Length: 88
Picture (cartoon, rainbow, N blue to C red):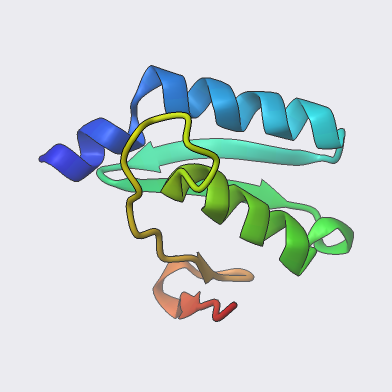
């Protein structure tokens, strides 16, 4: 699956990792699942601007990867089956 190849792209993950280090908050990528990245945020760190920046990095609005890709963002508080889309 092409989308899962892009999601696991080393370059994308490096750019994302550098961003997470730069913002110095307690945010972690806890797993990848097919074409999804799963993050764990502390409740006090769930800022719309941070999730928007992660979305922009993965969509490649910065021009690092040469192709823009649509990225959907969902959130769940306790149960994976209760995900809801985040609108920006």
